[in-house]
Amino acid sequence: MEETKQVGIWIRVSTEDQARGDSPEHHEKRARLYAESKGWQIREVYHLEAVSGKAVMQHPEAKRMLEDIRKGNITGLIFSKLARLARNTRELLDFSEIFNANNADLISLQESIDTSTPAGRLFYTMIAAMAQWEREEIADRVSASVVIRAKLGKPISGQASYGYRWVNKVLVPDPVEAPVRKLIYELYLEHKRKKTVARILNESGYRTRSGGEFSHTAIQRLITDPTAKGLRRANYTKRSSDKKAMILKPKEEWIYTKCDAIVSEELWNQCNAIIEDARSKRKRPAKKTVNLFSGLVTCQCGTKMYVPSNSPKYTCFECRNKIATGDLEEVFHEQLKTFFFSPVEITNYLSKADQMIKEKEELLASILEEEKKTRSDMDKVYKLYLDEAISSDGFRERYKPLEERLQQILEGVPELQAGIDFLKIQYLSSDQILQESKDLYSRWPELPSQDKRAIVENITERIIIGKNEVSIRLCYIPSSSELMANGERTGGARVGRKHTQSDRIYSGNTGWAGF
Image (cartoon, rainbow, N blue to C red; front, side, top):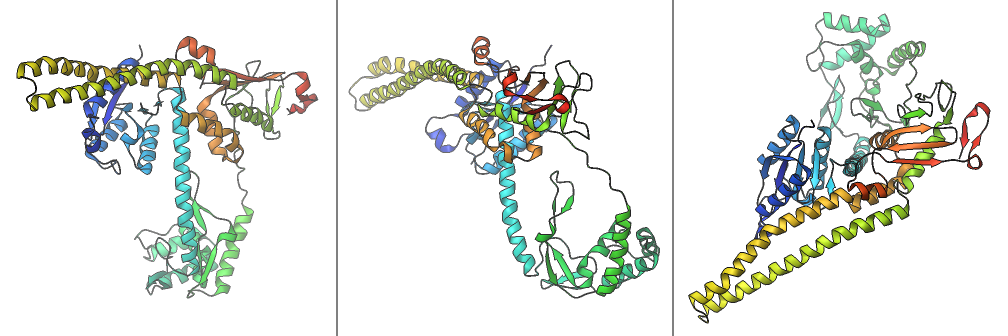
């Protein structure tokens, strides 16, 4: 039996909203009714009434919520709209990344986003792209300032190279470390072994700046650093894509400025020539290739297809069926053009779903109008009473039915809103997600390979290669007829692009040559 999903409710209503009658109780009831319609269990309610949305990450309730997410106490958070979660874009992106990392869902009723559904999961893909874009924008601005500071010879970040220190923003030799740095070059020229140099230094009692022992990697780093010969190198490294290591930038981006030398250029060149000679004699391992659709491509005979090292094609080693990697990506790219739907299917489906939602929204509007009129009538009766135009009994007789009707309306509105929320999320992806998804088609060629792979993994169940067709089985959106019949947006749709003899080129063992 499937375990009931445990979720929390996030209540953040500003003082101004409360003054307009937008109460926390209203938001909580609306969220509870949505959870009930999904069969979820409410585990926690997080109250942040009258708290500004500019920065909520450090609020005790926000910290409690994130701790519950990390511990798995809740696996989803329901809130009325994204602005209620956070108005700060950076915090919204941070929330999304934390939830995604912990396999938890964000459910925004106003924007019709429910990441527990296949349609809503694309929200994580798009929000991650936004976060990456923002990080790159910040990195670009920082990089621009780094280049300027580096050209001026000013410190950029971190400590000065071993043997040096910063004095009034000028790099000068350190009286204690500089002799040791020079000794490293002299020992290496004599022994030609980095580990031997490290052992001699450690046995002699020399230590790194942090107090640790020298390693052979530290010795190589210090020897190859041109600062020792009077040429400080800056802006030459950056973080790798996985953020786990530093890698070199292209040499044309490196910046050199002069500084006081510790060793002669001749000694520096001799030591680096020895290192370069040793490096050239080592055979580097070949780079492992990860293809875009690895693990997802299956031949029509049921055998997994792989890309051999000597061929740019996915190959079935049973029946020798083949398709070029570039051609398969072209087919997949074409599927993104209509976001897995034909324009006719989108129009028909959305029109039916819109009509159903429109009817309920019209009912909600009429009820809200009635609420407004009822409140106005109550104000009029009360004014008559204050002006002594009616007696106490007359006031009670006129006011009480209005009060009872208002109470009925206030109790019914959240239930109706929850029903509309359920329909929107169940039948429709939010307009923003739909539009962003369509944009994937135009942006696809420029996307980095790791981003393409992430999208493929997120929406693709299997790709079947036949002799005359390519079928892409998606785990995202079923056909419009299935949607209306089942009343939900789940499951795996089979979207295939079939090819006849006239629109493909196939010759012998060359496989698919083009479409």
